[in-house]
Image 1 (cartoon, rainbow, N blue to C red):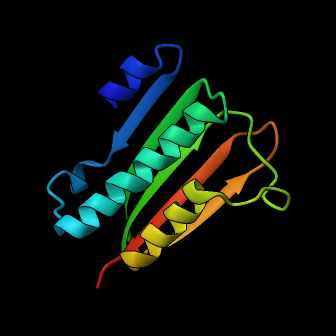
Image 2: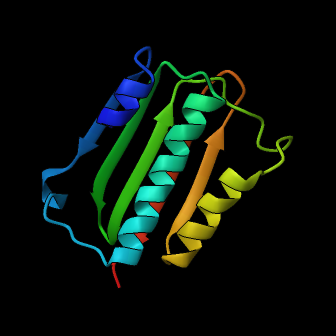
Amino acid sequence: IDKANLAAAHISFVFNLENALKDQTFTSVVGMNIYRIIQEAVNNAIKYAHAKTIEVRISEEENGMKISILDDGDGFDLDAVEFGNGLNNLKKRAHDIQASLKIDSKLGSGTHIELNMFNA
């Protein structure tokens, strides 16, 4: 988040992590994929969406945890967009760590990407 703040001083970054998850650990493969998913989502919001605010929320759920990346940018029409390497990489990384990924976006309303990881 600090690097993102430096790269885009005109964008407000918000990071919320529930206290219950502060000691959460992952294998290196899972951790790297989570990091890359967040990185790609934030990069897309900066590069394509012209977002003014980007928020990353990590919360505990009944059967695991949820990571949400939200922006107030341009949004896009899910039915009209061609899923390029970035969005396809998000889906592949989520699949590789047995997580579900949802992308919700509307023109003019920003984008919400949600990664759900379930306890084994």
